[in-house]
Every structure is written in structure tokens, then in C-alpha cells.
Image (cartoon, rainbow, N blue to C red; front, side, top):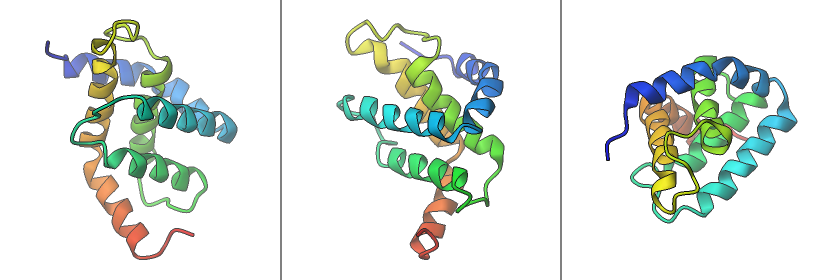
Length: 133
């Protein structure tokens, strides 16, 4: 089974306005981040990007807290959009289908992490320099 990356990008683009409004509501965004962490903890093998997921969540939190602002808002929107898709979006594959149901969620997350890998590396370097409180 192959996931259509263009369809995923289209779904993320469609949700960007909703995501931008969610990002203005710190409590709603934190709820999404916590829900994403809970859902991800239930997925056995998240793939090669699994190690970057906590970094992505941390970067979003640091951006919202205005601790880390050296990233384009579009990058943060794409990452939050992937989380929103995973939790609430229109699925390409229903989550009700065991095992296979999370494939599209993982593909969306993987794509968001891949597209934003340079920004995540920059954030990681920023954290390693002791900038995060």
C-alpha cells in the first residue's frame, strides 16, 4: 500500500486555517500535544522518525511559549497540522482498522518531520546550547 504524499499535503493545506486558530489558544494546543503524546505511546513502531517526535512536540511548546522564535510560523503550522490530522483529521485510512489504520497517521507525521528536519536540527542545536529553560 502506498500513501499519496500529494493527498497528504493537500489535507494539511486544507487544515492550515483551523490549525492557525488552534495555535492562538494555548490550552487547546497543549491539549492536542498531550493527546498526541498519548496516542503515539500506543503505536508500537513509529519508524525512523520516532526519536524526533518528542523534539517536534518540544519545539512547538517552545515556539508557543515564545522561548524559541527562530522558526517560520509555517513550519510550526505544518507540524501542528500533522498532529491535528493524527488526532481529528479526515483519515485516508480509518483508525478503526487494526494496525493498518495508523499507517496514514504515521505517514503524515513522517512527512511533517521529513519536511521540517532542518528546522528540527536547528532547534535541537539551540536546546543543546542551553537556551531552553
